[in-house]
Image (cartoon, rainbow, N blue to C red; front, side):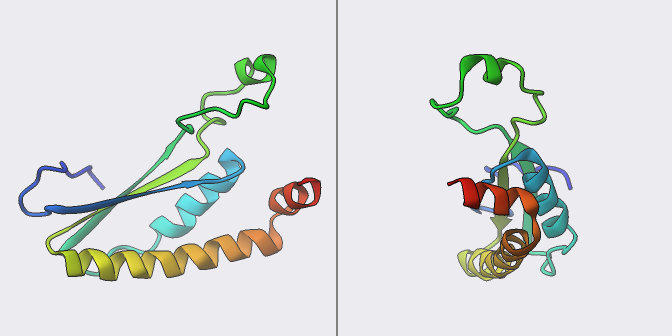
Length: 121
């Protein structure tokens, strides 16, 4: 889906949700799982993008930071909604949050990376 300009008068209501995840693999998995369900309303559009966190973890050694593959640093799932009305925005985001809860629940229950980080933390 093409990005919609935030100043588009047809879709004046916007909301961006940034979800940090532990790894790029989990962020990519969440993106693929969530983008399958298209928006049902022609009055709502959304975009997904993976980004690197704005602030890197200070506890990570500098040499490890330098060895990262640029794609591997993209661990934040950024979802932006555009809607014609604030009601349509609210309804769509509520549905998204339900789907997101399901995806994260499955990751927590079944993904070895998540289980490993919980055991270490």
